[in-house]
Length: 489
Ligand code: MN
Ligand code: MN
Image (cartoon, rainbow, N blue to C red; front, side, top):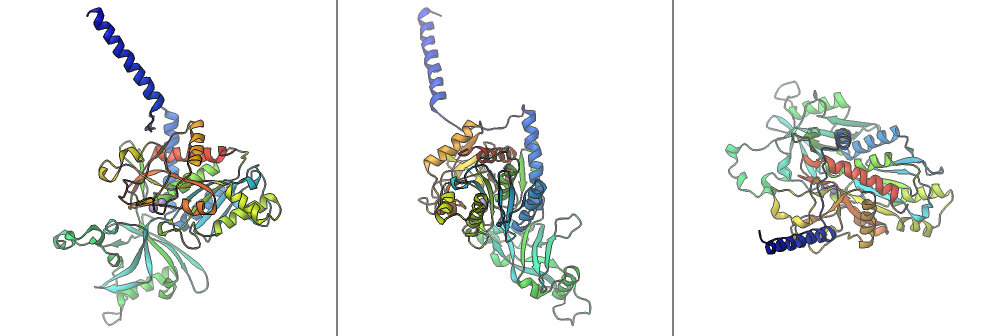
């Protein structure tokens, strides 16, 4: 090689080095977080997700998840909040809201009028509810009429083993808890589908009407009440008789009951390497569980009081007495302020607490699915394995119905994570005009709380078997913990 050639090569090398340097300095991308060489972290992730799978199996409805959470909280020193008693640094309290929502708190040393740190998630999931008059017989079988809850693809729910969960309140006020189809010895239930041999017309239909709402009828029996064919509605009577003998309720009691049909399958590890958790109801119990665990594991003493709020009814628009739009939640927060102050705060002081509070609205994000790339903008999408996913804004079309976090607040939260060396990612819900959605953030923002959406990115969202990467679950827990400990502290 000539000297000239060497010089040229040297210059090219310099340019390349400089470009590399500038690229490092100026560009940015979110990284996959798995590090199989870090044995300690790998074990922590896998162990955490084993506990999480138990929570998914124990809490398949909002009521059950509240019961499970209360048990977990009490085991870890939390006591029921008594609004007439005082609260002091380090106190751990909770309040269940009509059995279907929950607030839990760890009290900090700071002035409550300077605000709290909140993480809010929802613990209701798409499912199939019973109608108020559900039981009927047809063709020598007993079935139940249903009304689906939340955004489901109805065809997911046919030809599946299903479980029945819920409460029936008897005439004497006693509550009967149902949970049938979870124990290996339990029977399960199912919604039948048409065989392909006779499915020619069905297969021509649009996916949303392949199975219609009125076709989601649950098969619950086929043995008649004894006495022969002359007995009126003997198949229905056979089941009513069995229900009365076993659980003590009759058809009238079902009218006021709350019964939910959910997949009978358990949460499982997914993949040869067990990288994912698969299971029903991860939207949004994955954020509910990680938030609770973060609260339980907080380093003491805290400066700002930490609150986890678990809402119901997010999947139907956050209305109702246990939904995020209910005044019940800020009311409990205000009572906590009073108990910490030890005096009756003024209206404006209570508002000070609300407006100076900071919140993560923690709900699942959608993970990029390489099988369905056409609905996504790969540059602005969350990915499985890249940590807690932030969504600055939600909504549909021109951000309709959005809660759009302020740049200042988004930056404050992500800087906190950067300073604590906790990775995160950001994305939005698919391509512009492809669809959209939203969650509880907007209702807290309406109150005056600074809030941003974030959570675990999942695949197959709203299906009977949602998928989340274990490292995302673990890193979301780590992020919530840091938020509680460090936000404005
Ligand atoms: Mn959700
Ligand atoms: Mn959802």
